[in-house]
Length: 580
Image 1: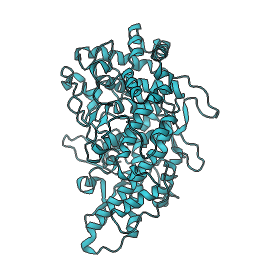
Image 2: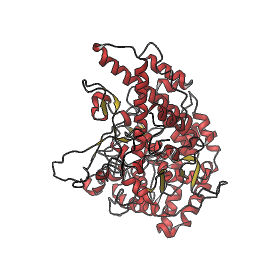
Image 3: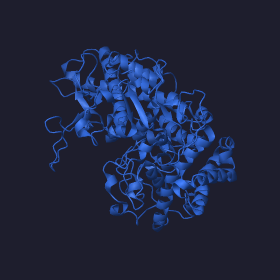
Image 4: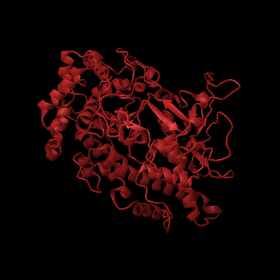
């Protein structure tokens, strides 16, 4: 989600994909629409024309999204903070670690072969492979049997695998004696039939393969470090469970390993859900919407069979979420990060650090080992804060190395991809979404003048679009169509800027995100039952053991507590560079 590369597809032009003239209104497998498929009159239109019904109109749509993306290049004049040491664009409510937790969650909800913007329409390659939401498939893959490359052998004389594989960090200079050296994701060298070798001859082999379940979890340095954090926690949970097990004997070793892995996976998934519900959503959602959804039995206004479908592995994600509201995380990405006490890296350098982009300099060295108190508020630390949520992205997300042009507009960057993908998805228009929600929950719409009063909404959009004509060269026709029918991801950012000064999502964005995230959580038996984390973990443990082997796990309700617990069980208190 946040910083999502095209994984090899970016070099193709849309004309080469042979989809521009055969766009279908059929929703790709694994996707659906919020409130069901909208009628043609309810869909987003550009210049009054539905892109799904008129593929020949796509050139005008691309031009419009190009110009809107250029308008959004203009920096936002945010109000000042009470804390004068912060930049105006920083969000003191959301440390930047949550930006990448959102990206991790996006990978856990959606996995498509090719982005919709690059594919050019709802066709081949745009299906969603995730059919059970928020079950940490992005971390565990298909488990030790289906994805053995991401798991380490338990012992040299058998083939059991219960721990996630990690890799040694690299030292530019002499390696110290203290601290765990396994701080990076696992990476490997692979022979290439083409004969291409990206190694530094006589110095370092190119580690081109990231041994992770989801290659997007090596999109950049912070993402791979967050993946390693979750792997370290899983491995520590394995050790905790093992200490409480009885001696299974040689014939029971494989069954014991299987139970141990499933119990640890269940425990980590439960902790993950607890953090999403009580920490992440509390920070990013409008407070009134969060209060309506955070309980164990919220009243959903979308389809009522979502929990059942998710439970049986037939879940579908709304395009209005995946290609609309949840793109807000891209606006939270900072232009630079203090990674640890040793290093400050700009966004371009951060995006470059992966096995795809920089294999000869893998594994990550000590300057890229994340000190987590720089990304979450831990013991009074002052972390990197995320950017406020609004219609503007950090300059690095317009980098042509990572987000090159792929169509005739020659527009580079992530923002254009977000806007174009939304325009091609056949999504509900903003007006129609507001009307549909108003029919079900009029009290929600009544809380926001921007949603309740269409004339006011159009005028506010028109005023903002007109204020930056020099950036996008927007015409009067552009401004008229965009203010009357704004693309959903743009409106979600605009709403957050206008309604909450960018500190949380606005009401519409919060409703869409809540329906999907809390809907996914409701499909999990442990998460849906409510109760304390201790009670939920007790249920997980007793699925596999007579006793509660997870009783020593403390209450973990936020990311700071997760990091502190991981530091303890992974024996990283004295790690160099600092882990905490």
